[in-house]
Amino acid sequence: MDNLLFGLEELGIKKTNGVDIFQEEKGDNHFKTMVEEKTTVEQKESDFLFEKTMICPVCDKSFKTKQVKVGKPRFIGTDTDLRPRYEGVDTVKYDAVVCLHCGYAELMRNFNSISSRQIKDVKDNICNTFKGITNDIGEYPYPVALQRYKLALYNGVVKHSKLSERAFICLKIAWLYRAQLESLPKDTIDYAKVARELAINELMFTKNAYEGFYKAISKEMPPICGMDETTVNYMLSDLARRCQDYENAERFAFAVVGDRTASAKIKEKARVELQIIKKEKASSNK
Picture (cartoon, helix red, strand yellow):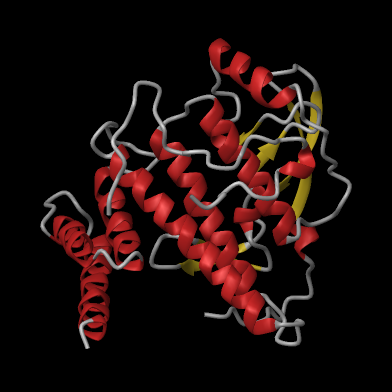
């Protein structure tokens, strides 16, 4: 299989090739299967950031990580797969927190949620070979943000985190590849080749996010990654469409439309999704 965790070797993480990111401890069946306008506000991405001091639950050392100031950036909407967009800063880049000393990495919301057994797993499989990482740069370029997320994903594999948590990291990595492609300068050397590679990587991680969430809904009870059942169904509909699994895409969208507890807003989003599915399905059959 493709090495989803490529790029971690320089941090001392060596055993990433062939890692099954959704492997479970007791076995598991394999799942089969807009470019943004430039802001007119004269603010740099770094203007939206601050240094937050953290204490690592694995090595007990303190470190600093960059976070987005709450309420500072202006929310401008979401993509169909719920990727948030803010003016002036890509907030997704700053959600993966990495201990600079030992290599423990996780999304901010889950950073301190780690058991003693998981701490041992991280120490045995990551800390022993981790070469360290710095936090000296200002804003995170996309390659740096992607490296941090992939380290968080590998930590999730090592400590057997929930399927949904690993899937959510995959989804956020897909969002980062999409954002990197959107911001890629047109005068980049070999632009077409680079753009194609970014698009391929986005789709690869989208497929893994879909696989992980699809498995998770049969094993985990809502809320899943902070999302209620209706939101998860809507998201799965969009991910299924992006993976050209149109049958399930329609099934999940119809589940939202027929949900008596669902808001009018998300039902309308599901109806729009069904229209997109219909068009893409018809186009694929030509």
